[in-house]
Length: 145
Image (cartoon, rainbow, N blue to C red):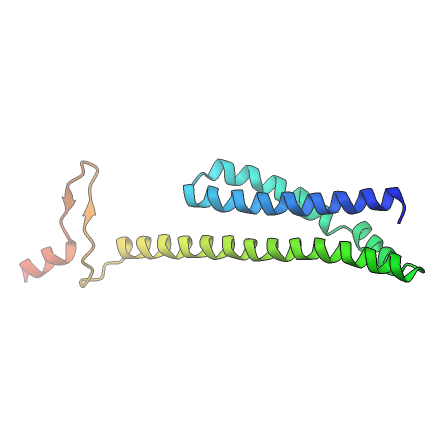
C-alpha cells in the first residue's frame, strides 16, 4: 500500500470516528432537548455520510482488497475491518437515536391526542392561560342532564 492509500485509509477511519462522536453528541442534544445543537450536528453528519457513501470509497475498497500480494491484501482487509467495525457501532448509535426520537414523538402525539379529544372518560386536566384548571366540558354536560 502506498502512502496515498494509507493516508486515505487514515482519513476514512478518522471520518468514522468523528461520525461516532457526532452521534454521541446528537443523543446528548436530544436528551437535553437542544434543537439548535441537534440541527448543527445534522450538517456535520451529512458531510461525513456523504464521504462514507461515495463511489470513490467503494472503488478504493475494491482495489485495496484485490491486491496481488496476499499479505498486502490481508493487511488492507484488516484495516477495512477496523473501519467497518466503527461504522457498525455508528449504525447502532444511529438506531438508538432513532428510537429515542420515535418515543419522544409518540409521547407528544399521545399528549396532544388526550388534550384534543372530547372523550368524556378523559381525566386530563387542562389549564387556561392564567394557570387555572379549565372546567372539563364533559362534566358540564353531565350536570345539565
